[in-house]
Length: 186
Image 1 (cartoon, rainbow, N blue to C red):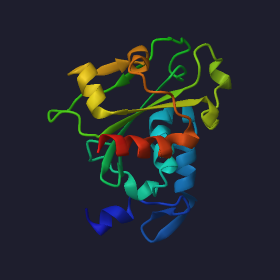
Image 2 (image 1 turned 90 degrees about the vertical axis):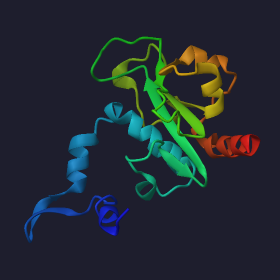
Image 3 (image 1 turned 30 degrees about the horizontal axis):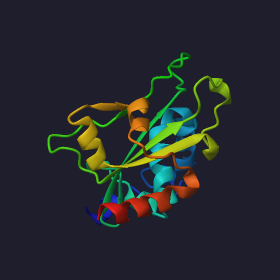
């Protein structure tokens, strides 16, 4: 990847928009507020951010949309999948949650999945605070287990995920759980 690409992929938020050489009176932070202030609509990105942050990674330099996985943690490739009970595009809640696990043409490319569930069924959507990490649940599962139990399936239900026997992890224990899992699969 070129240095030029990296320059334009790691903004701090303070950089001003410009019109040629003239700086304008708004910046990237203003854009982020406009585009991403409704966190309920960005929970997938937030899930990746939280997992990366829990692992102590420099998020802007670790994020690449061109890899078949979400996070590189040492030699381990991690895929982060998120679902929740609340979405801004629907007022209806379904207790049947599914995570996308669709294999690519080359199969599943990660070593570990981190499945993130936001909220509880029955919560009032307006009261869901995605910044409260207490409402997030993390299920950390080796890809091999997903391959063995799901084959070529494109998604896995929360119920099936729970039946695999992996305990829910809270945000504070993501790194410890992933590190222990890495030791057990090596």
